[in-house]
Image 1: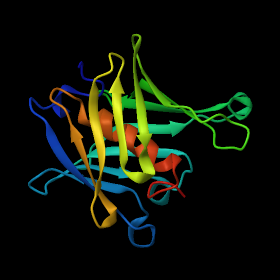
Image 2: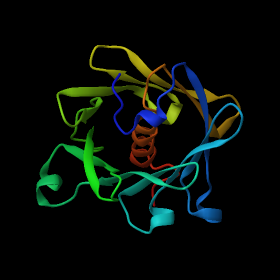
Image 3: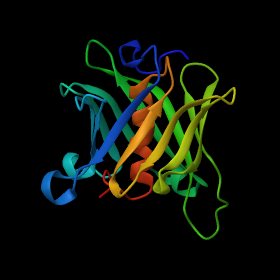
Image 4: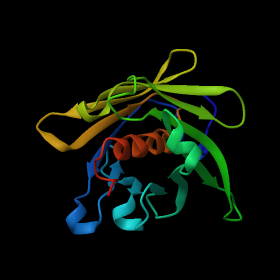
Length: 191
């Protein structure tokens, strides 16, 4: 798999990462991702920290911004049957460039339940989310049908779960997608 955000966040082997949700009351929500040595790899801040509804930021363990993700709005979006989220990476000068668009079906009694699709720019590459995120039982699948990451329940806790990433997968991209899923389902990154 080609890196989506950066080659720096790809590994040559399968990795198990642990996600810990942060409470809204204490520090504005979001979540922290650690590796098997309990070192912080990523931090995700939502509107509880940022103060802007529909906006997320993924940072590395040192606090450097990697992805800015925001929900598209406007009249056209209001009439659409999908919500659109756009992910932007930062270049070495600090400006943003679009790297992915995530479409999820709007939740209403009129919409048909559908899969969540992520399109990667540039090119015709796409990914799907299969399964149900709130149950911590879903996978991110590439356009050839290969599982690139699995989200699994951590027995006995709703605030902790694990993510298994396959070799050569861009973990920053995976956790950017997970940040949007967290927001869509009204969890720690939402207001």
